[in-house]
Amino acid sequence: MSTNPTSDQTIEFACQQCGQKLKIGDSAGGHQVKCPKCQLVQPVPSHSTSDRTNPTSSAVTIPSNRPRPAASTHPLDQAADLAEPIESVFSEAEPSPRPVSRETPTKKLFDRIVDEIGKVYVGQDELVLGALVALFSNGHILIESVPGLGKTLFVRALGKVLGCEFGRIQFTADLMPSDITGAPIFDMKTQEFRFRPGPIFTQLLLADEINRSPAKTHAALLEIMQEYRVTVDGTSHQIKRPFLVMATQNPIESEGTYNLPEAQLDRFMFKLIVDYPSETEEASVLRLHSQQVDLTYRLENELETVTSAEEILQITQASSDVHVDDKLIDYVNKLVRETRRWPQFHMGASPRAGIAMVQAARTLAVFSGRDYAVPDDVVQIALPALRHRVILTAEAEVEGYTTDQLLTQLLRSIEVPRL
Image (cartoon, rainbow, N blue to C red; front, side, top):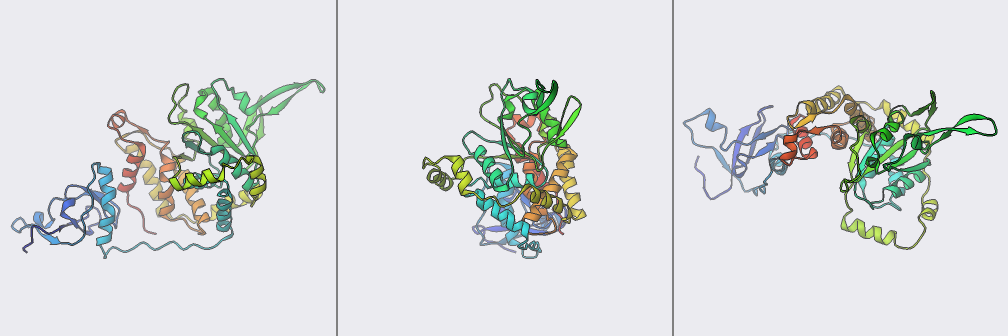
């Protein structure tokens, strides 16, 4: 078949995994693309596969009027850039069915919580969603952000809207474990020692700049975050439920900071990266918080308490009834196990990462008004659940890779199940 060399042409080839017939512009030859059927990321041959099957035939290219995708310099970006054009040119690929959502009481409550928080806290949707998913999944979150993005305001607003107690600990180099948990004090009246609870005895705890304290101070949080109790002098003291730790660390200032121990990092359900707000959001912040009105007054008078600790616990317990298909369990299992084999990872994720992903998928399903989880729920929380549980090799760091880049590449390499 003759072609016009000046026209745009396409290359036909078969997917290496599922055999799906693919076609794309010849300018993508040598780049990476994602199959719309099995999601496998693979290289595009420079010529059609018919060249290899029949050496005597000329290269088969099909003229196309579709605009060529923009080229990218990084292979990870090439895969992302070319994924959409490939999916759009294949009409034979079956579209995934849309999950059916209902206006359940839990979904209405979630929407109302977000709306109430939005009265004083603008933007940062990932932080709001991540904190609520962690709270309703018995998890905790680690926030990496620069100062001044309203983390304290968010926790205070969250406590008011949810009807929960709020506490804050400023971590410093001289902070002792007993300053967090509390300690026995001698009561002169009774001539006995009695336990004086520390600031950890709250429900929503902001652990500000947690990496400014040494490991012995972090150790005070290990039992609390996992078992929701404090043991002092052989006596255990229970923490009120629900209980959420929101720990923050500054990615810029490294002087006087300590790396968090792996045992501590693994106890956080999510690590959320909070960036500066958009131009529109920042303008809204300026209008909202430049009126010289006391913030405590606004929280008490402008926000309405829409739920209670008891209702949160009931919803958390009810989310265990959300159906998670065995294919989805296998998908999560493959994701977690693949992090341990990925060549650029020195250490992969623990089984606790898989548990966190399944629990979070259940909560996201409840928030969406569904009684079943879908792969989109897992994909949505995969990066926050894994980015703090893997360690890059020295070679990967030298080559300039980031954890999110490699995890994105890993996610694209594993087939997403069809339920």
